[in-house]
Length: 114
Length: 116
Image (cartoon, rainbow over all chains, first blue to last red; front, side, top):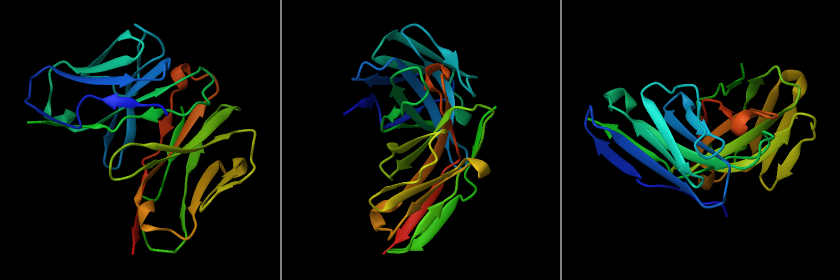
């Protein structure tokens, strides 16, 4: 089974801090994704990566950056955390390029910015 | 642009009732894929099913069934004889053939509450 591991289930940070969310997958997947999930808005794509050192903006990239130095690891960075970034963050991975492969998700990180 | 709409935000049923979740999508692509995911209270999204745009055959898996109709751009999901363990948020999602990195567009989700 595919395992996607997010470093923290719950995280509390302060406004203005630089925040790192880490995600590791163990199935050699090419593609990795970061979403945020807010009530009534579903999942919104922040960034994704289809290869090491490659990244593409999703629908809501403002205020975030990402890093993919190794194939198995994809980091989400909040450069200067703000209260409107309080949310559930979900990492996912998938294989292939045909659009037909399901994404596999981690357990999520519930981030609170005070 | 692609769009997925799940008009029902929350459905509450009593155990053993059937429940149908609606999903309507918009895309200009001729080849695309539709997915359903389940998110239980624990938080992890679990993949349930994938459908190709060129395969309109309905599918049944145990108590779950899916009705795909291209003519109405819908991909509805029915849980038969619901159980308390079916309580979760269900998401419908859409991907296009060749989409960079297999990007998915998600609907807003439908919360299902099954009462004993």
